[in-house]
Length: 507
Ligand SMILES: Cc1cc2nc3c(=O)[nH]c(=O)nc-3n(C[C@H](O)[C@H](O)[C@H](O)COP(=O)(O)OP(=O)(O)OC[C@H]3O[C@@H](n4cnc5c(N)ncnc54)[C@H](O)[C@@H]3O)c2cc1C
Image 1 (tube, rainbow, N blue to C red):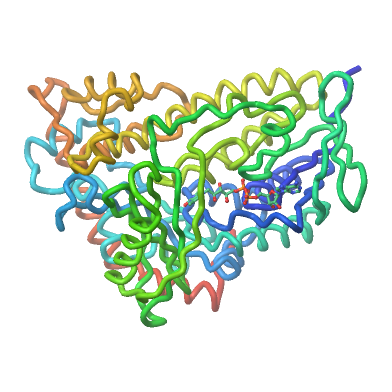
Image 2: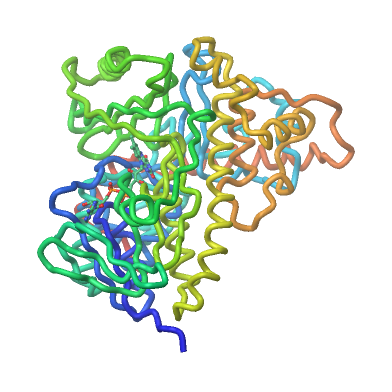
């Protein structure tokens, strides 16, 4: 009889480790121990999430109001891209979280091109860019926890998020927490990990080990030697400067979206939390110097109402993912599995997808582990490839002309599958058939938002099946819905203040 899986050890107390420990402890009758080194702090960045985080937090069983209060969290309704096409003052577009109204039932793109070419695509098909421009919250004070009027994820303080999750996992879910450093890994004869040698607590054995040790990838990368698959030839960014920026006044508006502003050799993120903004410049060290990157960040902070003197923190990363994520009785989740620039905030979303897979497909015995692992590796290699293509799309459609942007458009740097899709998308919009899996990371709607936000041409005659009247009906519905939402929804700051004081209704 194969050994039963009874005890899971999670190594790492960053966002990934605590999310994994929380979901497993909440949904399985398994012993969960989380080991976290007192000498290696979590990375402390990663402040934008997807709407999927609402489900993850609900699965763990936290209160959304507590989360808002303790993590200095705010609402995120999508991304706004400034200057990505030409860099001109009026060059911006939105990638909202809400699907276009009527997506899949009518050729919205063809109708947009034919009858409303002067209106930004996302403005015509979605209420959400309008809510973002107006700084509106995606729900009302009477909307229950985790429910939405408009789809939303979160902006949060990454340091506070880890502390919040730890309190809940240890206090409410019975996760055992060891503050200790893993010095060595001990193996069984068959190559499985037998246990971890901890500096203070000695040998810690388990049936399954989840490597959440960040970029060190202590178990999968260092112990098992599973290599990285480099992606620098596709996505060049490998450095970031991150800084926290105070608001000019305590009642300054809180942005509803992550703003990503293109720079000569990278881009700058801007995330609004209730107490401060998080701003960072992601760039390619091969295309610019740290000093130039710092100057661009300083200019941006100053131009957006922040102070002149900033002391950003520098982070370096290798754009890559692991050749395998699950090897024997070890699964890597989070930065230990890989990292690519945070352009669409996909890292925490991948953590959630990984832990959802693990929690839903949890092997009962050691014999099942290899079967589940093979399926996991196939599925997540596919996901990484799709994420890389989707991020690359933002660069290949640009018309900017510094060496960084020109290099991004060189054919050799564009994955073949993306090149083929771009050829098809000249005459028709992205559809479900281009992204055939049930659980795609980015739906065809996201591709449409980027393509048409960046003014990718849609050539050729309209098809007989295009139903322009139906598309027009959806545009009108969107306009009506937008007007109603703008009337009813409070500002982000108003609603967040209300939640801090009174909470939200719980179902
Ligand atoms: C510049 C930048 C911006 C980002 N922005 C976003 C974003 O907007 N959205 C998003 O989703 N993601 C973003 N990310 C990614 C995000 O930060 C991570 O995915 C997330 O924080 C999870 O990190 P982690 O838990 O895997 O690793 P970490 O936070 O690095 O945690 C590693 C843990 O491992 C432990 N550890 C290491 N070695 C040992 C040892 N020997 N013994 C015991 N414990 C050990 C450490 O103590 C620590 O607790 C960004 C990343 C970067 C670099």
